[in-house]
Length: 149
Image (cartoon, rainbow, N blue to C red):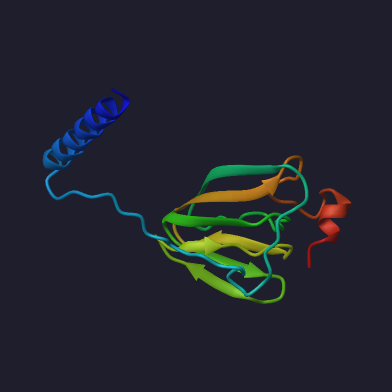
């Protein structure tokens, strides 16, 4: 009896799958990796902080010509420029412009500043740890600030 019920269930699932595929024509689900990296855009190392994992997803809007404050990330992060263009400069003199649609693996433990070259929006995912901020400025926690170059 168990095999009959299992067979009937599998037949029913196959019918639903066939019907669903017919309803969508040739449509199919696609997944495209935008970037995968062990280093940031300037070649810097990435490392996860100690502690319980905490993901933060942030939508950032920067009007044309405005700059983010000079800051540093003690956690790895990646994002996508969903609109506009963003120029990022590090204190070491590295400069990169990210165009609309571009993936970004941001610098870590490095002082930098981003400037919108036009109205810009980003979707960013921070892979941090509970209790560790997504970024620090010069007047932040001295221990975190001290890790920044």
